[in-house]
Length: 219
Image 1 (cartoon, one colour):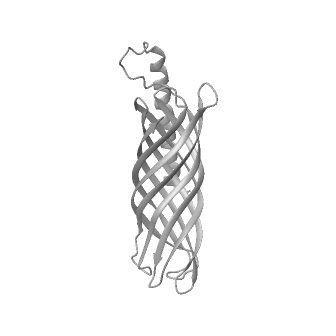
Image 2 (image 1 turned 90 degrees about the vertical axis):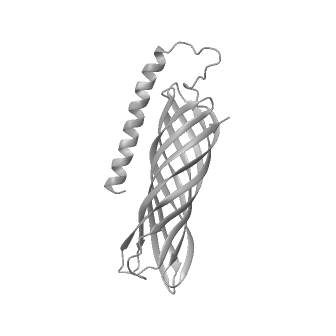
Image 3 (image 1 turned 60 degrees about the horizontal axis):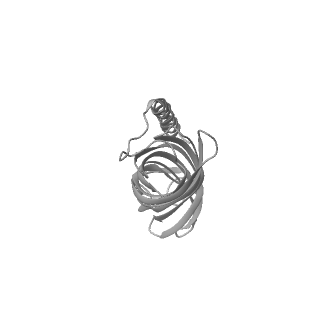
């Protein structure tokens, strides 16, 4: 994980936990919710579905030197739009654990200045565990698990492969209405190495950073 990824991960976690601590202090002093008002504090248990969008950046590496010197890295950037589903469970007074899966369309494309005609991550997804702190209307969390990405590489010959690797990150869920929450998240993903047939077999590895904003609906 590069320094930028580590810095972003630490920053998201710090902001999330600081916000949750302040929110928890405020919630203690709140009066009971009046009839007709929306109660958006605490109670993160249950299943949810959602949508999200965001921006990703990372690297595609020609490990064998099929279309560039061995180990050449190509920068990738692009947008993503996806759906997710998960469930959370309170395991102690302030700790919430969960499981979530997501899949997203992506146009994260390599900067192909030399040696490579085109390379694009077509879609990506993950299956992750999640562990958070119940700060009332705020749920800062860390998350990690399995990640996968489908990519197409073209250097005159074209091939498409699906990578499988790992992902880790942090975020904060914010209750904005009854059964509705905003999800702000950063994740680093290492999708591992896959062999592409590009007129000859070559190993290509993928990594990605992603900043996303989502809206979840619980039930």
